[in-house]
Image (cartoon, rainbow, N blue to C red; front, side, top):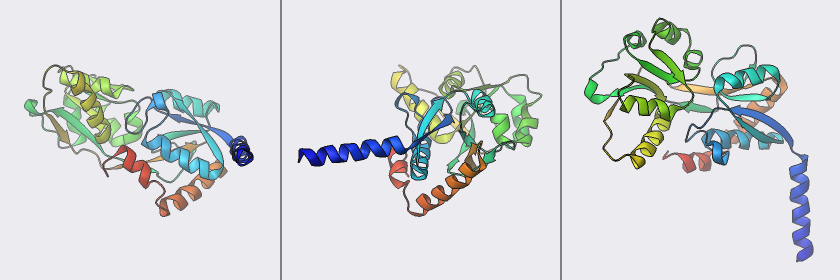
Length: 240
């Protein structure tokens, strides 16, 4: 029995040593998608699973998106998660879908029908939102002197509750988790929120420096998705 245990331990060690490390840049904490303290989250685990199928051991690098873009340019990371458009690199097929909304305090009765309405308000979005949402969004906010972008999305929600900002741009699952965290430590009831559907669903890809790596990623992603290999990961982090 002891010999059998030793055999399996050696086999596992050999398998681990055979995996090639691959550095992937993720944003800072963005639950349920990215949880830095435990190197986990919906996005992190999906990409770890795909890369494992390819024969790679993922090393997650957590940093603000702007720094990750620079790291990818300099070759400090091999890939960057959560990308919609980055012409100078090789984008994978989409691996996850986000539902972004504009959020306001319900009692303020702010009416947002089109992107250009954002120009009239104090707005905070997640870092690199101009880049992710494209030219129409960028044009809508470029002349707004009260527009900012923060990497810390819980901070933007706290500022909305404190009436220090009129509108925040945030993904729905992320907002609900951050809202629950704030409620758990608050001594008073939080104001109700109103969401405004200014955006369609955002499908995100991985940006790779190497085109062959990107092609291999697409093959493994398609195979695992067809096998419903991500079902348990989604169940762990969402109610879907």
